[in-house]
Length: 186
Image (cartoon, rainbow, N blue to C red):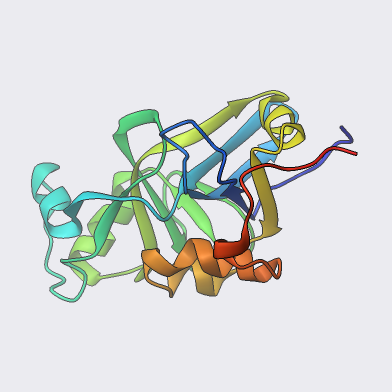
């Protein structure tokens, strides 16, 4: 497979995806290069909201408007670690700049800002991330495990999680109800 860069793209799990971690998932790819890929699932909430998470990690939380936002299962890697996908990019201690407006931050300073000031307000907080080694994602793409489409910030930050997968498919002109479980090979 030719060299591709899926940074700032969505991965849409095909219906035949058997891996329970990724079935029916929409993954936002924050980094993809010759060493592998890193992303977070953005449509799989866990049984925890922001207020509960912040209490568990002992970070002050004063934003009533954000208290009931869900925390998401970002993937099966480092599930005890938090990842904040956000816009604007900001200047946090440990941020992977995905593009000029979106960052993925792992440092505590972004959580302190969310808890005290409610910023950045455009965010998806996950526990864990999704990772692929060198060539692994490309192999999965060749096996028709994923569809890909350039990411859309509106889908990422403005839509309810229940609408994200179908909306990402719509970017490709595909209706979720019509997506077949098997793909053909020419």
